[in-house]
Image (cartoon, rainbow, N blue to C red; front, top):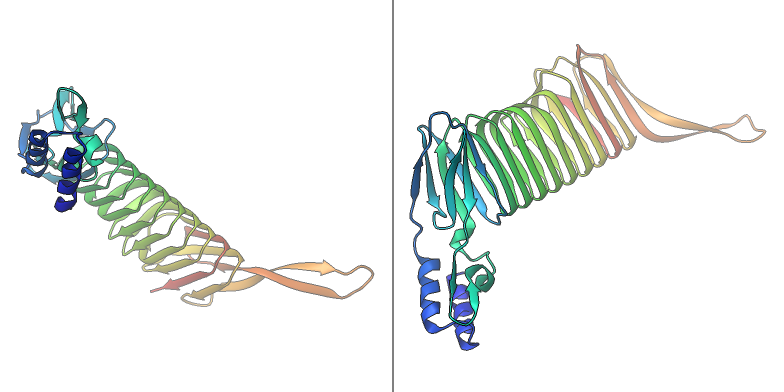
Length: 326
């Protein structure tokens, strides 16, 4: 990557776009180590917001204390305090010559710049709000609410104790060791949940949903084109699962539930305790004109398990359903 940047700079010198002096200044700026910047947060500040038109990878780690420390990207972002909110805002740095204005962003197409990464240490007890146009977001170890939105990029969170809103137009979303209500949505990408205690809404238009070893409370999920896998799940409140085109694989533990599953075009495979459930084919009967004979055409299946009070509703229009109690 460094050789490619140097080659681009040399090409710009050869084409007369920048001078040799400017090339050296650019190299020094790009390849120099970012200096960490520390900002003391007032006791009444609980919200941290990263705002502006940002194309950058962002990493946030929560720690004890009342300081915000920019580990990487201090030369490209500034910090200001507005009431009970701390705002982190991108700045613009450019190098110009006497004839033509030449910015680092336009020269190196952004993706090669160290300034297109922001790494922060923030107070653990904070509410976080981030919006980026292009870039990955990683947030770890926060006791507060988290809102992370990326137009193009992955969103990953871990060890969050609070409500979360995670949105990506194009990218995967991952959530580990998190406790709280969740709204998670991606237009094109997978959603993965692991070791969480949560409820809320999950949605992906094109991608899979995977939930492993978690506790679900009043959870609704929908996939328009993709599979849904839930393994080692404890259900504490109503669970609604829907896939338009895709399979559903459900493995429950500690289940005190009432299950109803239906596929319009597919099969149901169930391994449940006791004999208080049945699988039946959904059939359409066609009468031939002036004939007693009837023909049965099976299009899908339906399962009903008469368990306890907590309802689980599973539906797919085109796909198979597998249900197991472990």
